Length: 162
Ligand code: SAM
Image 1 (tube, rainbow, N blue to C red):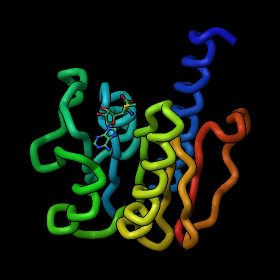
Image 2: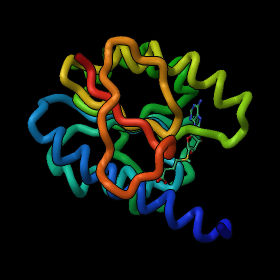
Image 3: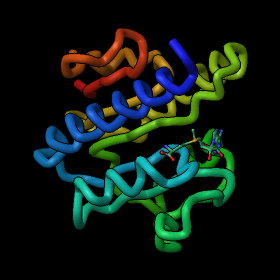
């Protein structure tokens, strides 16, 4: 498969899954955490699909399209390993949905990320809340959910907190 095909498949899976979860999360009150703003594409899709929902965005830098810059109070700058742990005074309630798109493609970095990210995601997600992550996470207090048809196994991971 060419890199172009692989890229298209990845973004298609991301769109299908985000729409699947935003449908589910309409039944769960609480903020959404977007881990990794990047270009702002998935943030833009989230705010379009969850109008009126508070969406807090985490990134170490601002490199998104100008139309996707979050309002000041909702952009949390810094290393997610630090900001996610200490965001409670700003975010308040635990999250109804955490979307994490911070895989690096480097297996060693990604293993390290999985290790520090898993407990932080557990701590910041409310019971009944959803987590969608490009990296597999170790979440004992969660069920891993079936994904919609057409998503290749291992491409994305969908969890719901018990
Ligand atoms: N979902 C985004 C989109 O649709 O445009 C793409 C996200 S991009 C793949 C990953 C982003 O996460 C980058 O902007 C990077 O700066 C940020 N990032 C990755 N690891 C991070 C970390 N440990 N702390 C803070 N930001 C991080």
